[in-house]
Length: 105
Image (cartoon, rainbow, N blue to C red; front, top):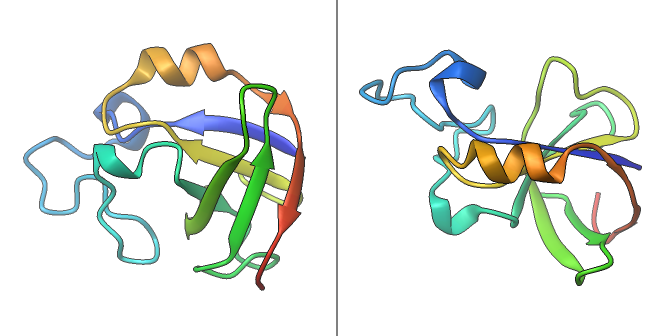
């Protein structure tokens, strides 16, 4: 599966830091930095909110929960949340083709 990375930085999501909806996902969850590498956006027609997924990465498995969707996140693709404003981590992650295990639908 292709796995990219994202943040809530205003340059990416368009919501200012002062917005009450800053870092609020499509499921209504407000992402905090403590959710970094634990939450993903996915195609909600394939993976409903709350689906648990393990992303198998060379530096260790990441156990994540689907909490968001995204305009470009269609089909077998995930977008990993890496922190509210940590664009450096998102750029470093890039887009990777990784194996995943789906635990719940």
